[in-house]
Amino acid sequence: MTTATTPTETVSYRLTAMDRCDSCGAQAYIAAEVNGSELLFCAHHGRKYEEKLRAVATSWHDETARLAEVD
Image (cartoon, rainbow, N blue to C red; front, side, top):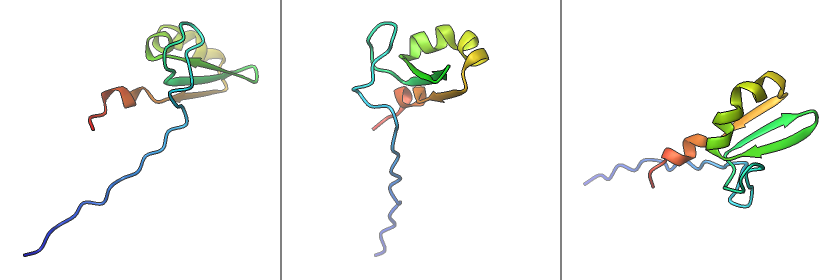
């Protein structure tokens, strides 16, 4: 009998549970760099301010897909 194994993919994230939203203090899933400073946002506030932030941000890092992950 042969057992097929699927390689486990290891994903590492830049934002951790210690990173908090600058607006409300919830866990941050979005990081935007604006004028050399990093701003952190939860998914809610990141989406709320996304249009304005993307216009001025030099980088946009979004890990909101983590919210839909199933273990």
